[in-house]
Image 1 (tube, one colour):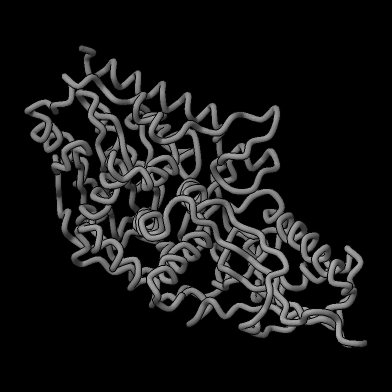
Image 2 (cartoon, one colour; image 1 turned 90 degrees about the horizontal axis):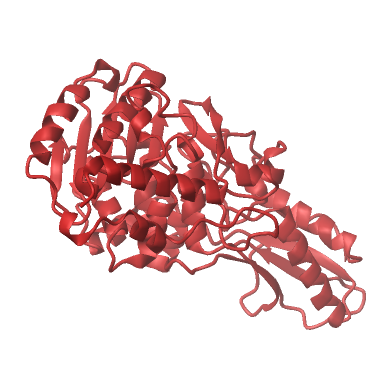
Amino acid sequence: MLEPKVWQLTAGSAVLGLVLAAGAVALAGPWDSGQRKAERDWAAAQGRTGGAHHPGGHPGKPAPAPSAAGVLDELAPPVESLSAPADLPDGLRKTLGPLLESPDLGPAPAASVVDVATGKQLFGERADRPMAPASTIKIATAVAALSALGPDHRIGTTVVTADDKAKGDDPTEITLVGGGDATLDRKRLRALAEDTARALRDRGVHEVALRFDVSLYSGPREHPIGPNDNIAPVTALMNGQGRLDDSARDSFGGPAPRSGDPAGDAADVFADLLRERGLKTSGPPVMRKAPKDADRLAVTYSRPVSALVERMLTNSDNDIAESLVRQTAIKAGRPASFAGAQQAVQAELKEQKLPVGGALLRDGSGLNRHDRITSGLLTALLARAADPDRPELRPVLTGLPVAGFSGTLQGRYTDADAITGSGMIRAKTGTLTGVNSLAGTVVGPGGRLLAFAFLAEKAPGPDTAQRALDHLSAELTS
């Protein structure tokens, strides 16, 4: 039987190999309104869009990361070692207890550490106290979306028409219908325009009146934080997440100036692309709901929800988060709004028999300071994602940034008291002004996979709070 330290080295090597294979070395994003955003990773810098690389690689580029099942198989210790040391809870109390008292974590931080294999809580401090989670709420968003929609679900953006053919000199009316895909970009709009132009030429159509339909979503478009570089107005149609700088071309990570009308801008881009393909357009695009009896001319689909979840978690992508909770609401037959999404996500988690008492999920991104979640719920979500009987939830684990290597953790775990966590910890970060959180997994003593969550409010400074959280989680490796 291997000693715990040997297992830790083995696990660290497996994670490091996973990271290097995926090419997931990211650049940390700047601060904006108190929230650190991620995170253009190495793959994105090579011209791909998104955070973690997903299936569909290019020749000569690093291969995608192995599936979650393979990763966990590599980390799994022999059956005879799957019993946590009897003194582990006492050891955690001795090591984590004093660290939680650090003034860098505010007056009353919460903590939960769970043995994933058994679901047993090994350490808890105010674990049932609802606190502001910041972006660690995206773990709940991910579990709800994967559970409700399934990992293979794709979000479609369509072009439809109710006209069978051109009527005299009148242009044929077509409608670009937003399906809520927050990853729609110019490349895919170009392909959609090509397919649309081909379908129209087959019908003998050479001039169109373009409409665009964003009726899938309801309620306020603006996030309660107001106009902000960390999130675009939440609409069912957008191009490049409404980014107004070069980041829309190669990456969707990190803050950037945003358009006030992402849907209208996307329709304008689509009109330009149609004209490039020889179609005439009569006037600018007009927002209008598509006719009920419309025929589909063309469609483009997002990557699967499994890939969207990984990208959201790695890059802490707020736009994808708000899209996923609205897709969850639509699946549940609720309004695709902030309120409808809150109801749908909480209902989905409750149906999964997760401890949602006291949870208040006002959004999917964690930007809302009125969100509340417990550290106990976060560890329960992570443990559920690792359940062998729930393989559809595995992207929750594979999407977590790797300490010191990718996403929002790329630049962390560098201090001497946290360096042991580098390459061994996968965790989602959360940062708002005065709010810092960290929730993820680590292979601990005895080769056991542990889930942990630490929540801090009224922290005096983000940098010192982050270092304290890194130190806490790193202690779980020894």
